[in-house]
Length: 298
Image (tube, rainbow, N blue to C red; front, side, top):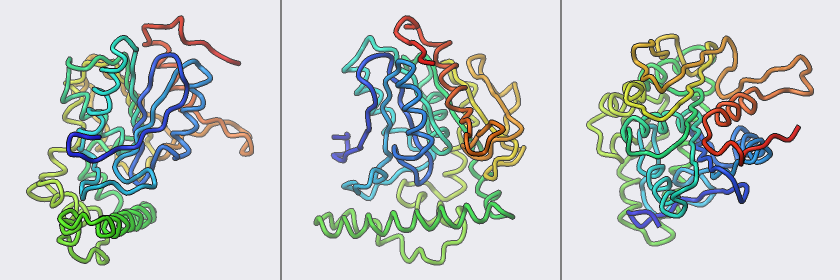
């Protein structure tokens, strides 16, 4: 049970070894292919993992109007503190994809030296939310925007019906107060009319300013790898930070290709190689203090 008397669902993989927290992207879940593929790879290398489903993303609607957004770090902090209380001596790391990567980097910067993590990895992160929201309004990226907004509207509709059905009338009213969302065509509109109102931001500009993770990079004390792609349809070159914005603990790796949480390599299209499933575990193995507990199966 969360501090606000709601719940979050998590999916475990493995029983022994260092523990890795996984955070999925917008409209994703622990069942997203990039999350499941990495969990399987980590398991083979001797790591345990726990994938957090942001509220309402597990297939079961949560109990409040509260959803999730790019700057909402409360639930990952709650999960981390719960795990740390249960296993005070276990090496723990965290990985975030897209929105989950922004949440992760913001959380790392907020907490600084208060965290006991041996490593973190963030992939395809919308480091500047306003720039990324505008990028999705142009060209081929509009296809992604349309699909994502459609899924978010469906998410809220399902949540509203669930709250009404379970007698959570006050919470349901918070969703109804958002009004008719059918005419929303951009993330600027959605984040202004939904996220800002549900979470008490002044407006969309306030939300983007306070929640973009790039401003937190120089405050990170955990060894952290940030992986971005030049051809990411959610990004522009303006998103990539300069070296002076990074703390000494942050490594930035920008690849020529990879798209958005793609990073597929190999010459045979029928046998793709998922580069993240090689790169991320290698970084974790390098940083893990319990290397004896981590092994490699060929």
